[in-house]
Length: 89
Length: 305
Image (cartoon, rainbow over all chains, first blue to last red; front, side, top):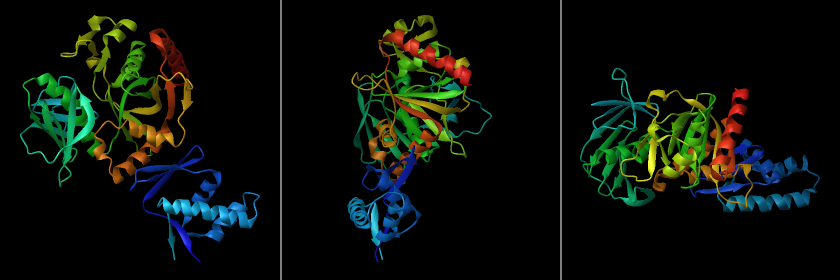
């Protein structure tokens, strides 16, 4: 199963409960919503499968597994298109 | 040879820099300022203007940084410890003015300091920093704090460094604050404590030479001043605004903002936010309100200190 990891193009910092990300090769800044931050925090620990990310979200939010997986898939695609996350095998 | 002290550096200079504090001939120089002719690499226009002259910037293969101002001077900064000045005018005051602003900024940049286009003062034991677009009132705000008994740390260029524990501090610059004639009158400065600025017709300079401390001061409050009536008078910066707002006040050519530098500034801006509170503040309307705000800040500070 594919794993997702943070790229070397990004650095992030957390302040007052908010995560701000910089893609330094592009010079672009990003913010994340609450669930996005939870996913990001898990990616910071190391490469994750979509299932492990989904488990982390389900343990904190009342959401069914299928919706959760769709939402995370959507978020990961966004993060990948901005070169903040990449797929590793 | 002249010995000076500025931005925490012992300076040995071949040219006169009367703005700076006198230095100690016995201490080893951190920075050598030399008068020399040198070749310029390809230059690009910058967003920087001083005295109506636009600066050009260049970089060579050895990471030397160059600033060129037509008919004033070219500067070459090497390794954070050599600044070469190629004067293109005989006016020593003008050479000095351009040396102690962006040119010395290149040296501080090479030494890894976090630089802001800002004025700063010492309030109690704390370093307070004021930023804003030109005309937003950086120097005027600093002048009001100084009138109320605070000490000047820097005008125009503020250098921030970090202790080993990560806490941020302001490195005092040099004893000069330039203020408009309107500010002189509005804050009731007496002209006898000021010097006229050589070519600037309507600016004066306050030069607390004997009373200027070079001791670093912890960074505690940072204000981004604005004049917008449709925004809140005081609001904390959101997390996303911390790197972007500070980046807007980067005082050197934007050509320096390569990916590694962006990364460094991003981290340093958050490092500042761990030591200091960062605010967007509407500049008080009129001198009376400015002085009222200052007087409200100062007793609070003394009680807290």
